[in-house]
Length: 216
Image (cartoon, rainbow, N blue to C red; front, side, top):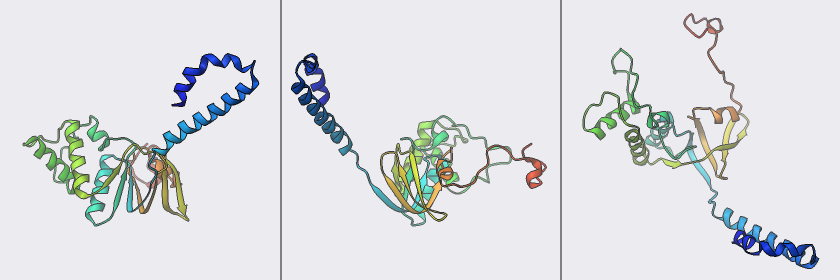
């Protein structure tokens, strides 16, 4: 290890000023040592180029459901997450669902399946209340059974476009994802913003679209 060498031979560095040749040799040794250390560290990174039909960015509840549904429709899917847990707020503490006062008939599709699986985990109807770890277990089951490949701890760095179409995204670890379709399911909309998609922050005025109950 080059760093061990630095510690072991540090006491002899006082001789550099007196012996120029020794100083030159040390510089070479340090350069080789640091270079070897850097190469050893970076060679362990498995940089990949992944090509799929659909790339979903964001491991939120919506991201999991989008990825699972696409896979069930026969598409190859990469679910790219900025953390190593699936489910976003649903699996991070928001275990009480505000279902309103109009019944639950509107909860359908994969969302309805999620709650049905929650009940199965508990062995009873828990009325849309659950522990975070149970929610995460359900999300993990969904992606595994659908055949979705999950990539964890990946942060968006750059977006490559061809005209108005996104063709690839690069991550912080060097991985590149190419897809026919990209879906931004992050909470922050990083992919959308990086792709140059227009967006609005906050609530629009009631006059903008003629909606009397919208915004301010």
